[in-house]
Length: 236
Image (cartoon, rainbow, N blue to C red; front, side):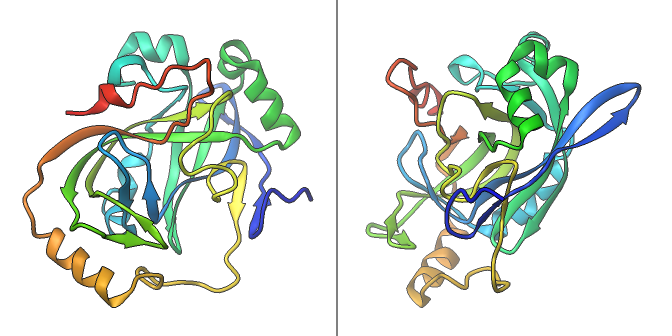
């Protein structure tokens, strides 16, 4: 089995039939508790907030790349042009948000053949979550895992999951996220294991604060040089 990075292993896609359509079903790790890029600066994504909205990811559309200008992927023209499947069996595993991606074989072959090849041949690829969040300002110097953050992302409302054939997600393959990636934890963790007492205190205070930002947060895009970032368009 090919190894992507420390503590990562490759999953395999299986074939399923639903409503007379053929699918490839692949394991996915969508978000991990940690600090990720956002349009307003680095955002901290706590596992407790992921847990509150875990069921809302089911039936969320999977599209190729994010829609332009912060547009919702729920629009019919976006789905017709770029939709290739949907999310199912979303769940929390340790500090990760995981799910199964149901990739419509015919649509995936037509819209982005390279992703179909990856699914068939067991090659992991990047993803990025599109969700509305309520971002609470963090205290100056707030950090998690050695990374500073400006806001705490709360109140997640999923819109879509983007798969990225030519870009890198903020929570990338090497970070333990992606399609066909299973992250193996040698020892189960409980939420907050990696947080200091000071971080716990910050979390308690900020979860009581008033929200000041609403944004369609693309968790995350790191565009190639020839791809324009639409992060700035997501500020709300």
